[in-house]
Length: 86
Image 1: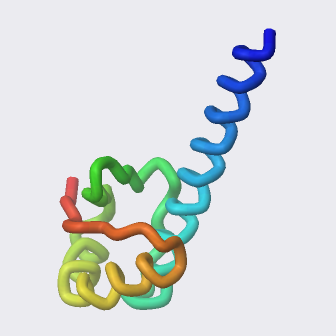
Image 2 (image 1 turned 30 degrees about the horizontal axis):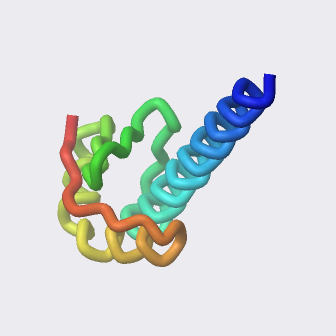
């Protein structure tokens, strides 16, 4: 039973950090590019940020990519290496 509790605690912590990271990405895009993203549009895996957005928002994000990555790093402490547009 103790192992199960430990497992649940780790899962909860992992989900919480994922939600915090997605919120940081959303805020950074809103501040720098002026667009809104939903949680379903954001996926972070192995230092790669995958975004699904409208063509206009994708272009805005591309133009301000360095500033957005810097803002995400400041807000969440997570280093994103590259952004992939879906």
